[in-house]
Length: 287
Ligand SMILES: Cc1cc2nc3c(=O)[nH]c(=O)nc-3n(C[C@H](O)[C@H](O)[C@H](O)COP(=O)(O)OP(=O)(O)OC[C@H]3O[C@@H](n4cnc5c(N)ncnc54)[C@H](O)[C@@H]3O)c2cc1C
Image 1 (cartoon, rainbow, N blue to C red):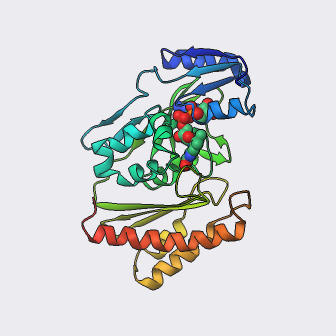
Image 2 (cartoon, helix red, strand yellow):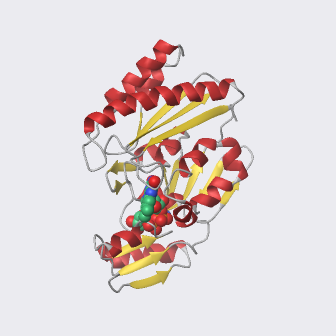
């Protein structure tokens, strides 16, 4: 059973910030509620005020402007994102990663903004956002800010958001080259479970290969050391070296899902597979 709380549907960005600042530590933003309401039910969180962001303008939907990339409203449900033609055709790695979140029912409610604001090291959309070099657009007491996604995650459950500040949009910069992305997620079961380890690889036509890891460090991380190895060589040996570099960069913990040692081992295995598949996908035509 949920404890009593006040529910307020914010009508504007300013109202949402104002309510959150007044509620302070007793306030929580709500998007899909798939994480927040579970934690409230389990009494891990006991907010006095829940501020619903879904009706705030600019927080819903995907807009695509030629030459300027993509703008995704933070409260956009993952299933809407997955079905969006612009996302599928140009940022397929994000659609693929979003598709691994929970179940169909969860994805009907769960938002992209909620997935990153949770700041779980295992957040499935985070590695893709790191590789597309997303900008996190926020709204707070001092107005609008743009935070590079690489600076957004500060630790498990911690983000760069200030008190009263929320994520309003996620901007994906334009990708001029053809690319092919692959997201490999290992869970205890094949569905409805958080990752034990995950790897995203994005191969770009110009020769760059980007790599990011989830669930194996305090935050999702990009592995530039592995990317550097693949800059000039993409043979089997280079892929093995890059995968080993990914393993060295990982700093996992042991928990109920898996041991630290297993996570390290699987990071290397998944990294090699993801890189191989991304390169093969690009060679076959990319997106
Ligand atoms: C059964 C189940 C399975 C799950 N499986 C997965 C999985 O496989 N992979 C995965 O990554 N996650 C999983 N989750 C976690 C969760 O569903 C996702 O992280 C989801 O994307 C959260 O989005 P939401 O809109 O529901 O967030 P909410 O529950 O509404 O909010 C989550 C947190 O973010 C804050 N918040 C929400 N929106 C904003 C915003 N715009 N700005 C600032 N703060 C905000 C809230 O205050 C709250 O603290 C699962 C959850 C359940 C219950």
